[in-house]
Image (cartoon, rainbow, N blue to C red; front, side, top):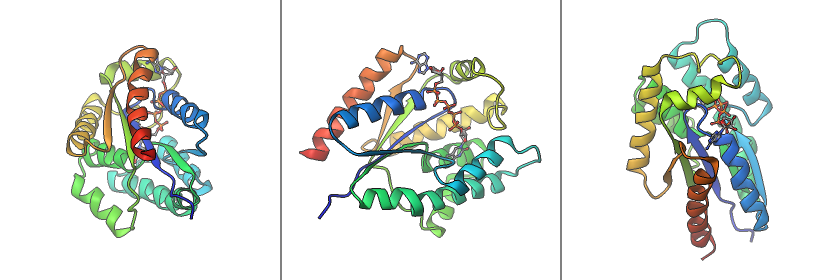
Length: 211
Ligand code: T5A
């Protein structure tokens, strides 16, 4: 019987380096001969990518609740069509953002509360948990500066500082509550410094996974 794949996610606020480090983690895993599927949220399926476009670029107002439901719709399709089948086939899944982002951004940032986010996930049976999550953390303004250098902000990047402060606090609280799974990485360091931390966490995880 094929061993189930492992589910690894990258989380953190805007511009902290999730995509950059996702590529790094993928290269480490691939070098070790592990089959990896790389994906992202919102997105990862045709429906999810269409929802992503709406979520990031809608010109009409989007209520906090509607935003949460669209994130969850994207996630449900993603788990059914992509994540679960890959894990069952023994492929490892590396995902740029997943459910923790809804707890941080909609639960914390939008102040819907963590209970509402948890209830919606339970109602929709979104119950796959990551085996490992890298939470890339750095001062908000510095991440936003990195993003600004890349061009026009999307709908969510235009939010006020307070929104990101609440989202960051929710992320950090979650990491405190689930230290086995969620590893905080100091993302303010040089890329070498960040990748050294990622490497340490990944090496320990791989030893556990294969030991
Ligand atoms: N969202 C998402 C919710 O509200 N709820 C949810 O449930 C979900 C799933 C998605 C948006 O949706 C929200 C959150 C988001 O607002 P996104 O595009 O996935 O948007 O998220 P972004 O954070 O905007 O992702 P980015 O890909 O744009 O940023 P990254 O991946 O964090 O950063 P990255 O790797 O692209 O790096 C940014 C820049 O910094 C440089 C890179 O070269 C790049 O130029 N960089 C560094 N520079 C110096 N030192 C380092 N250590 C560096 N690391 C990277």
